[in-house]
Length: 419
Image (cartoon, rainbow, N blue to C red; front, side):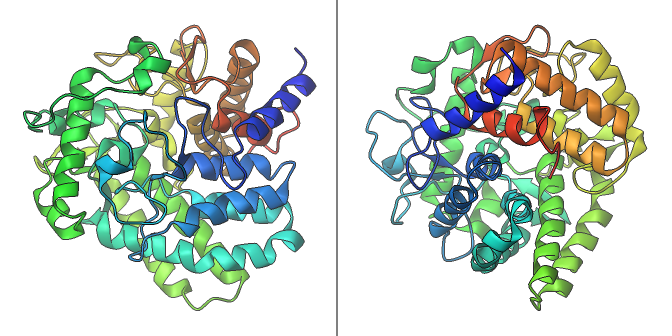
């Protein structure tokens, strides 16, 4: 299949997953609007339908909570067989939503959409600005501790079953979870998804926070899981930089506040540095110790605007060890599984962040390796949710929105290759 055919296939995937005002990640497996999936969808739509890109972001922010949080799932319609659905989350909101957030990349994607057509997007971006600002304020208030961006549920990170959470999850009491039926494993092979034990732990954490009434202070103080995540930290830092650019573009008065966030997060980022391993690592905040996990999130430093050459030898070694970049954890790590979700597979949307960051920091050769590897895995194995870095096996959902978006914006020969 030619690259031109793949360009059209990617556009068709976005059209097929379009539900009018929001996009589902893929039919069946994910029947609702997911937060950062939608941000990637908007980026993809901006390459051929600028208005539709803005509608995607506007629909996402229409469900923002009064305190500024933008939920990770918005339940626009009833899908009774989906689990855990709105009745499980117990959130009083119209439309119903989940009770946690997701990686805050919307400011970055909103800027990218705007820069694709400033004339068409000026009023649309200005209309989103206050929502973006309030979401960032929520993150700084609700998820930043000692200068570090933390998660209180693995789903919030976007890297659901990453090893970063293992030490914390071991302390989660699952005795009250009870029986339930998962939807994901009816669509995807069990070997490609989180385990039953992990899913029990996810639900126990959900029930804990729900029973706290989603109160930020109670969750921060008492939840068994609170992990400082370099991926979330670097994505929020990058989004702060893009939000500052937007504020300056529109002459908004919030520049000093946003710059303060940037300065504090740049300064605190060194706390993620695991000197023993020589990489950015997650921190179990309850135990006060590193999780000893070299993951794809460790390479988000460049995306965040931090040119840390200490990470280059790790990336070069890992790229040499696999056929396709970038595995979600170090292939040399214990428990590396090339096909199980965030325990080893590559994710094209993570590649786009890593590759774009490398390019912006001037690491052109490495950036091109990541970009060409992303192009190759899609061309060879299709628009899957994620792929094996070892042999490219397509895994998870197929006909996937963010993989199509990344093809159009980053991986295709016709793509810009960055933000």
